[in-house]
Image (cartoon, rainbow, N blue to C red; front, side, top):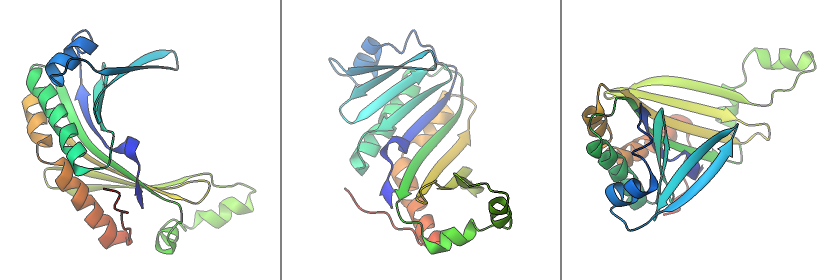
Length: 208
């Protein structure tokens, strides 16, 4: 299976002050850089801003900040984690309610053992009524250390496989959120891939 880069994120849920999270502040305070790249996207009538410095991007929204890794290397993942932690350190009174550390993978060929998991009793009945399944999802909410691991397997319309791992933890404040992500991203990537290999026989292709 291959990495889905856009799924490699750290999400900070809370009530964020968008007036503070402007390009100048993010460049100077968060990245300690002279300048950053800015991208503006308009979707569903909403304007969203994304700021990029080297191989890390920050997408601030009123209800969350998404910090994304822009390469699959562990060095980039470490910088992504550091940026998220620094943001929480710089804005300690921000009401933060939860954090999520996320990874995604895809595989073009659907493994037979996973196809069997999705072969539930209603599949044949759906076909008998002239209906076609466009997408199927299997979600497991698992206890993992001091948080919850949300594991999602998706079979797409073209019978390829998508896997998403979300390490979710509710927190009471920004300092707790910072502690919940520090030195976790690389460890959780490796542990997640170990679980996928042991349970489903899925192996990550090494692109680093």
